[in-house]
Image (tube, rainbow, N blue to C red; front, side):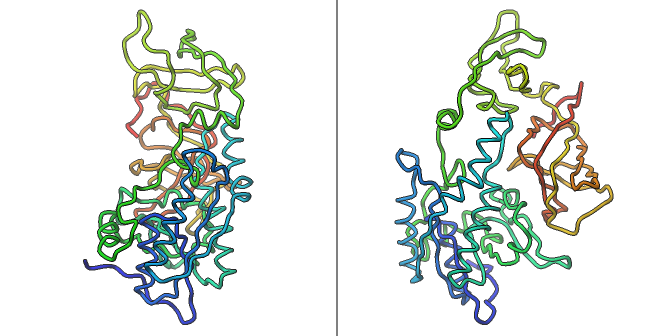
Amino acid sequence: MDLPLPAAPPAGARVIVGLSGGVDSAVAAWLLRESGWDVQGLFMSNWDDDDDAYCTAAQDYQDARAVASVLGIPLHRASFARQYRERVFAHFLSEHAAGRTPNPDVLCNREIKFGVALAWARRLGGTHFATGHYARLWQAADGTALGKARDAGKDQSYFLHAVPRNELAAALMPLGELHKDAVRELARGVGLPVFDKPDSTGICFIGERPFREFLGRFLARTPGPIESADGERLGTHEGLAFYTLGQRTGLHIGGRQGRAEEPWYVAAKDAPRNTLVVVQGHDHPRLAGASLDTGPWHWLAAPRSEAFAAQVKVRYRQADQPARLLPRTDGTLRIIFERPQRAVTPGQYVVAYDGERCLGGAVIETVTAATGASAAAA
């Protein structure tokens, strides 16, 4: 296999690799070692509620140890559980309690992996910090640039858009030029014991869990009515925090006499009345958004003050959507879609691209409905 090895290290450089116990970070460490870097590993345990079947930290640590042994590198271990709860999980809960839908992976990257973990890596003598993210970094005329991975199906630049540029300048992401199948093939070929380990899924550091049950451990249930768009009561919800726009499953309202047998979808949350508004049909007009307004924009390119065209994503894995972006003097943006977008959700992130390069992003604050329009498939 012809591998795009990382660049040789500068004199005196040391890279600390965030070894998660998975195949991606293991291969990232191997690639850097093969390129001549002084490599050490750091295993982070960031969720301290390990009394159930969903926490894999103990096994992940053993897998990371096995990888470090094969590579012949030191492995350090640190717990950032307190910082995770304060900087990521508390925000996750407060957003859900407010009826919004946060994306903790974005904050996890900014606050933990490229925040406290990067600072810890520097304490270990690291000049650089590496991860198994699928994204690319390069030096552009205006500073460090973040770009999409070669493997479009694994690209994680969306989740990295909020990392400060000065922290990205110290980062290495060796998998950005590789496809996932090549990563597994390489891991098998060089004898890394995690070559066939399944990818981790679910909430960052918490894992895949029954979401409503998990959230209910931290937030009170506040039942209220489920209504159709014309005000007919159809059922009872468990609390607005437990639902997101565009959601189909878990409504338990089924068909209704005199109505077409089409699935129901969450179209809105009426917080003052504690009411969940639902509509029938995946592409119902009430699910379509024409534009959105953001919170403060985080630039990963030279900031722009004039309106410009770009491609945007309002959720991970969404295909690029053409839009017009209008910067405001307060640092926020209005984004007008070329075609209406389905289930644009406050609390999530909108991320902008110029071709392969990520321009930055921000939290979605409000959405303007595309009244009478059909929602585009998102």
